[in-house]
Image (cartoon, rainbow, N blue to C red; front, side):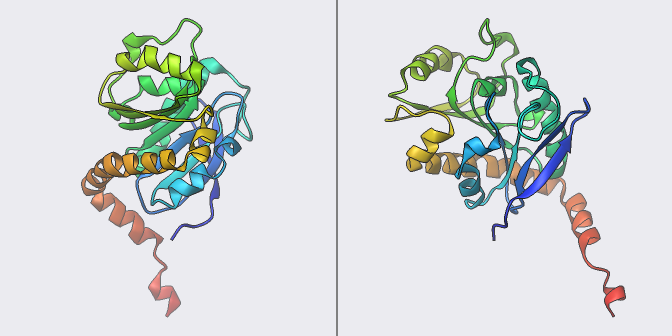
Length: 231
């Protein structure tokens, strides 16, 4: 059963607090990161639909956006996302990381060791003025989604896709829309994203549960009501 999203605040080790919402579903965690200049509202119904597909969805706002701390700073996105994973992964296990636009470029420097072995990149755009530092890129299982009628994104994808490390899949749909609007305009693309996450992220999630089953059992036990107090 999917509950209503609840407000969350995650304090990073650099003293920045990122705020957003979580759908507390008992399933693999999927973290949504919006693009620069947007906020979590940009996802529209996308996050809720993914939660209803059986995933614990966490949607956070970047520093200086929405209710998060600080001022917008494109140079800090990579650091903040990595530190955000440091806080989320120990509690919920490896995540599926979803982003779009310029912010999605930081995903290329993250992998399973950072807690993001499975990634979804939607309509990527260039973040760094000098382009991607491919020397810092890492391998991950990625699906890249773009609109075939969105010419700037399509050309950019053709340039960077061959250079991406690890297993990857390029899904092209017939639309000029980009980012979350692409998924809203093309429901089949959203369904394919959910299938991709279910197929690849679930295996990481189950392996993490098996490795931490004693810890998970202890936490669940601590949350149970004290029966002695009820009698």
